[in-house]
Every structure is written in C-alpha cells, then in structure tokens.
Length: 249
Image 1 (spheres, helix red, strand yellow):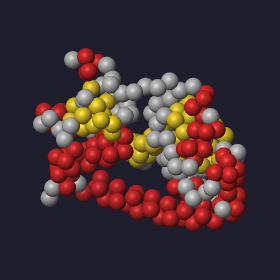
Image 2 (cartoon, one colour):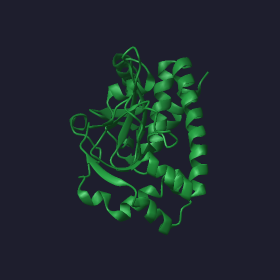
Image 3 (cartoon, one colour):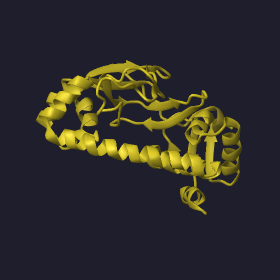
C-alpha cells in the first residue's frame, strides 16, 4: 500500500542553473524549427529569449489572452487546456523539455486558443512574436519549418477531434495511456512509469469524459493487470494489450 501513498515519480529540484546557457541551447536545439541551425546561429537566437521560472500549478497564459509570445519548455512539464463554451475543460497536450507552445505563425492580433499551466515546477523560455518573425526573416529554414509544423498541428487537431467524437471512452483512454507511455514512459519496477503527475481529472479531460467514468475504466484496466497506479501517477504494464484495445473494431 505504500506505493499508493508515495509517488514513485522522480521529483528533481528546479534551481536557477536549470536555465543555464548550455541547457537552453540543448532544449532550443530540440525544437523542430531550430534543429537545422548551426550552433553559432542558435546562440544568436537564444539571446532573443528570456527565461522564467514557475512553481507547480501556475498559469502561464489564459485562453483568450492576446497571442504575443512563443515559448519553449526547458525544464519541468506544462499542460495545455482548452475551455469550451459549456465550461468543460479539455486537456489538449502535456509538454516536456524541448517542446514549444503558443502559435509561431500568429499575426499579433490573434489570441491564445488554450490555457497553459505548469504541471510541475518549470523553467520556460519566451520570445516575443515580433522578434520571432525577425528570426524567420533571417533564417529561411526556420520559416519553412514553421509552415510545415503549423500544417501538421492543424491535422493533428482534426484527428484528435475525430478521435474524441467517434471512439468509445475505453478505447480513448487506452489510446491516451499508450501515447503518454510512449512520450513520458520510463522503465520502472512498477512497469512503464509515466513520468509526470497524472490525476484522474487530467485523464478525463484528455478523453473528454467524466472523472467518474475515467476512474471506473482505470480500475478495470488495473484489475486486468494492464496498468498500476496511485495518487497522481500511472505505470503501464501491458502496452501491447492497451494498443490492441484502442484499435479493436
């Protein structure tokens, strides 16, 4: 029962050195539209970013705020949440170091379509969109990559909407667990441990269903020995079976 009360997740302390120049360059270099830049040019781009530290649960920006910044996660985790007109929360994505958020192609007159919140303590780099446009004008590879990524993200959003609107909840949750395990999973005595705090509400918001339904299905997955879980953590024990469930007709 100790595992139920105590999280097995790693919980590194977030100090100022987590946004050191070397780490900033490493994580910026992981961002798709910066991957082709030589180190010297990446260092020039880095100078245009500012670093901010956040505690767990802080709001970085809210849905409807003017879209003025592009941001990159350097340390910690950030989640993106959309709020519907009916007041429902939909968890769009969970981000790890090296991933960006905000709309890089925004004109400056647009607003954020989601709320960004820290899921853990985090260090985030920010660049004003007008400065990012200068970067795109200077480096053609960045501008071309932004166009490709914007198109890909639109297609992913359409696929996610289809997924939420057509598949049964059990399949949605199985698919979400496999996706999170692929992205955040680390081998552990518990199984493939998803290395970020993950509540039943988070999973419900990702699946577009209620917390009660999510808890019932997660309990079924646990009874079937597909997962093991505790307070704010989940480990996948049988990923192939979850994948089969998500794909079965």
